[in-house]
Image 1 (cartoon, rainbow over the protein chains, first blue to last red):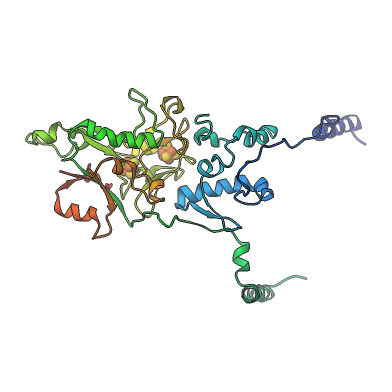
Image 2: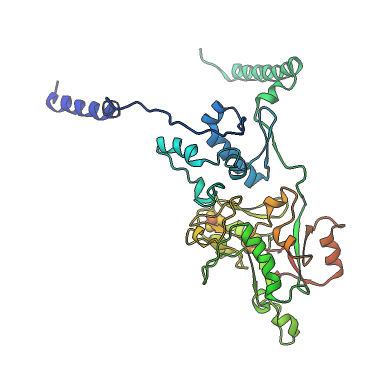
Length: 129
Length: 261
Ligand code: SF4
Ligand code: SF4
């Protein structure tokens, strides 16, 4: 092979870089879902827990656009229950996730995500955050 | 096998037919199942106040001193977490100014003393032809079908074109995080973040739940709010009976805030 002396070390370095995420994680603890504190009094979320886990950001995004841009603010869930389409008044209300730090933040922190929602939306239980 | 145009069109026609028939068959066998599997329904509150064209009248005979206005300003600013920033970087949704600033093109030497010296309330005019909407590159500010000129803070990039476009100074820019400047934050209304523009929204979120704007409620009848498109509405009746002015009418923005003189 022409230039084997350059190509083969080059390939080795390339493979090393490409697989870096895999071998650099060897020996580290696997990701563990953080323990969340769920609402005490409210049994039913806007949609099922599994669905919310996967889609809450899409739901909030839809709510935001529907409320602000289309002036639609009443949401009927799969089970027919009605909700005010509002992060603060519904999701963060005292019966639901008033405990932002032990619910929202735990997951977001574990995944190193910092949503900008709280820059404007106030957490009612804290009053100011 | 190469597919030619004729076979393609035939196949496309057949699949469309199958699709239509399939939908019909589903409706027959399991009525509603298709809709139920689709997006859950969203709607308006049944008690929502609606209009073809919202407008506000300001009865200047009832508002003679700045103190009378203050009640309305406080109602608005407390409800919407409008920060109190002293100096020329203030944020304002509702404010007062002198006759010569509010109506610069309607002055002459013989304007009656009462008018010349009294403060006038000012706010976004929810113009029918709003320059602020025309110049916003992100459509963060837009006009609704009922005439309300809205701000979508989520989309505002803070370029301030709208402020340059608005000839009434109705928009304020957040140079700082407003939270330290708000005395008591109402958790049920968002604050703004640094770098966005804000202004009066005719309390569209209150209208959606069947309530009048906060300033109108606080004004004890000095502000009148209603549907200008409806001939039997109070706003139309009062405009028929009293003389009224609008701000800078020659600019062609068609303001929908009327000053009863
Ligand atoms: S008053 Fe200014 S901000 Fe309000 S709609 Fe008219 S141009 Fe836009
Ligand atoms: S500052 Fe915001 S609302 Fe105003 S024109 Fe720019 S993007 Fe639009």
